[in-house]
Image (tube, rainbow, N blue to C red; front, top):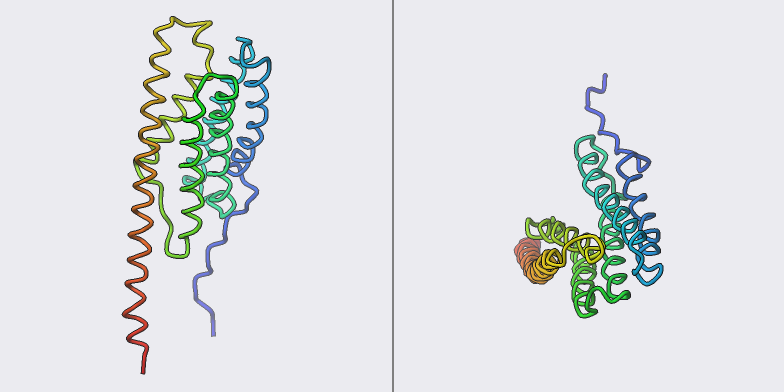
Length: 209
């Protein structure tokens, strides 16, 4: 008797271009941090180099996501490594900017507590379901990238002073959206856990003799 069943689709290999770009973004983190911190952030050329590395690294985030979705290259490694790469890069930028005195430490601490707290929470509730990135979360990522890029760029040395207001406003918007979306993710997690537990109760009752 011939077997006419359709074979299961083969999972994509972890060795693909999308994951390679993610790993490259992680590799950019120490280089970016070194360029930003060297000479206390006072050298214009080094700040420009740090800004260029940051922009290229952030661009790989968009590219690897598009490649993974369009070419069917989504892997478990990518799902884990991609957000880690993002958090490592933006975290290095926040911490580095605070070390050189360009950004208040309270901003960095607030953002990092939210970022890593939500990341750990998403892993903690994964048995109840996967929390997809919301529109607010995507907006937060864009605002953070723009704001950090503006702060890393040596505006004081190369651009009019009023351009610093662009950096202040975008960072303010990024922090505000970061906090708001953090509370939104917590609310989503609570609803998801409650819905999962409420679904389990009737099933347990129905299974009793």
